[in-house]
Image 1 (tube, rainbow, N blue to C red):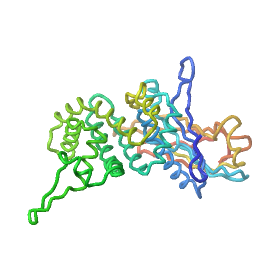
Image 2 (tube, one colour):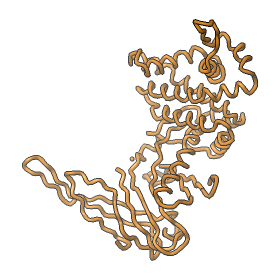
Image 3 (cartoon, helix red, strand yellow):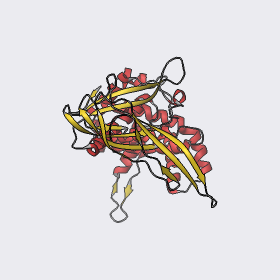
Image 4 (cartoon, rainbow, N blue to C red):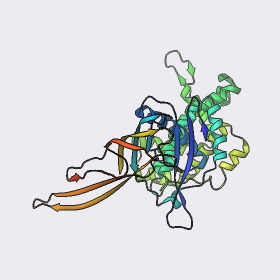
Amino acid sequence: MVQAPGHTRIDILGVFEDKGYKQPIPTVTAFDVYLDATDLDEAEKSARQVVEFFLPIMGFAANAAYDDPMVLLVYENAPVAGRHKYRQRLVRPKRDAVLLGSRDFDFELFAKLLQRILDHQDSLRFHRALVHYNEALTHWSVGKELRSVEALYIAVENLGPVVLNLAKKTKSLDELRKEWAQILDPRKCPECKHTWVPDGSLTSAAIRKMVFLDDHALLREVRSISDGLEHGFKDFPHLHEKSRLLRNKFQTTIRQAILSLIGVDKTVSEALLAPPFDLPKRQDGADTSFDTELEGIGGKLAREGRTHPELNLIYGFPSATLFPNGDVTIEVRVDITFEALGDGVLAHNLTTGVDKAKSVVFGTPQITKGAM
């Protein structure tokens, strides 16, 4: 459980499913977010913002990619009797590849990393960098190295002001200009001949020194890839081949730099750079929305032994008709079952967000428990 500022509480849970192995296996990570809101829309928006803050940090800690979060369930749960607004989305994520696309998560390491980021004055910049780091991991496969390198370079650019601020804590700008004189790109006024160093040049020098640790060859190559892709002056075969050769080293460099710049303890940094977290893990869902009102007592809307009230969707296809002009009409029957309602809890005013395709006729939803 994580206690966020205000009245927000987040429970982070691993969901296990029986897939026919010797024991249930983890399939997805679920976030239960408890917060105050005026309606379901506000609650959904606030919960998503909370989760979107935590996910990049969790993904970086595990060095594993994650999908954009999906809000599956949101409902009003005040401990009073009456009708409670309820919304659920039934999503079919790609869970069968879990054994290849998932990784055990070290919550203790994540918590220490999270605290360092929250305490850092540039926490928002670090967070943005981690979002781009995850984007690199989502493309971590053969043939997509260029996408990963580009995302990693954007992460570096987000860190530029951070490293320059850190450098200025120990030395003045004049001292930095003298120390980095050989790698700066000064400008000279053609009229008065005045020479100065642009802020961008100082930032670039700070990146070279504090992110790439003076590995100018690597910095030059990945910058060339990024510029060549963005401005179109390099052909794709060249960019792909360069990215294939440099991606892994670039990723390791960025990961080490982020941990160093955040200032985590040495033991935490070493653990997050050691197996299995040293190598990136890429993650290898129809979306149906339901809104209803659950009548009962808040806090007791779910069946005993279940955390939340949930409904299940079952599709049936009673008939299909092929017309002479080639059109096809398929009758789809949608059966909706409330599987986890508490005793005496009723459902009212069910509406669905199912998209009705032109060639599909939807049958009447059948509620097997609860009242319409």
